Length: 196
Ligand SMILES: [Fe+2]
Image (tube, rainbow, N blue to C red):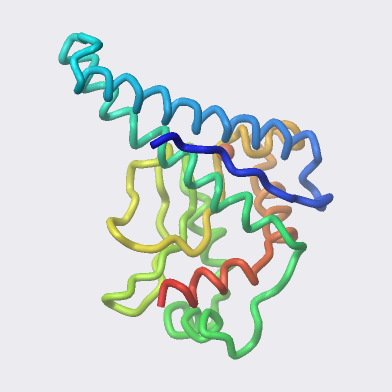
């Protein structure tokens, strides 16, 4: 099955330039291309039309999760920036779940703490339907540290490519602030409601 890249309708953002969004979306499309490339290679190996050393096949299999999650996480990321900035609604299911889990601390404040983890990766918020609670996790690269089977509620890209057009690495906090300025929490609330 071919993976088709999505398109995103992101209007002018505050603190994240049009050029930054453009190069970032192009990078996302590169992940999609690699998912298809690896899928085709492994398919050819399976059908016998391509013979590869087993170490190369193993590496392709390992690499698949990097490319696939790289594609999928960016879809979560860009979809949250569509439709304009919007706050969490008081009394919503998400608002109540945040109070249950984090008390006085807002989800934004908690994500910012997790986002301070050193290294490239993502701060990802999941909903755990078994324990009926939110979990915020740091995912290295795109695939190391993903929580099995949990629906993703929010994904914050912390790779330098997410902000290098507008900020230097030492200004990562300014990029994170800009992300939350532009975040459409309505998308996050819908994901939470769907996950429940
Ligand atoms: Fe990215």
